[in-house]
Amino acid sequence: MSLGSFMTPDMRCKICGATSSSGGFETCCVCNSTICDQCAVKCDGCKNLYCINKCGTDFLDEESYHHCFNCK
Image (cartoon, rainbow, N blue to C red; front, side, top):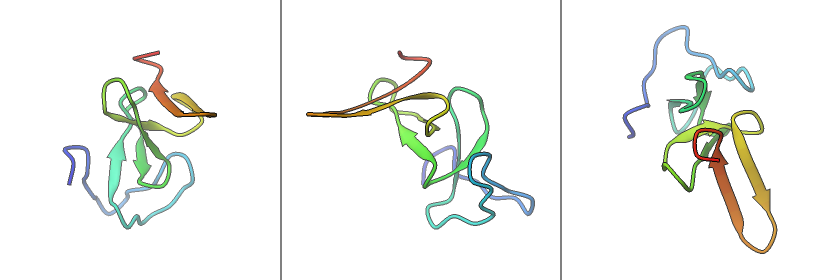
């Protein structure tokens, strides 16, 4: 379990609105929003998690590149 994983009764994913997550909830390293494991992307730079399609890039071509806006 990562340091960002925690759960409170009113926990909700900022991106999809999920109230439960099999992998737990995380905190975005850019905007500090609560996100579920399905909406979190691991940054290749700082290794922290960020909001998918909101707080970083997610390019798929010959290789995968994932960078939060803090590292971009």
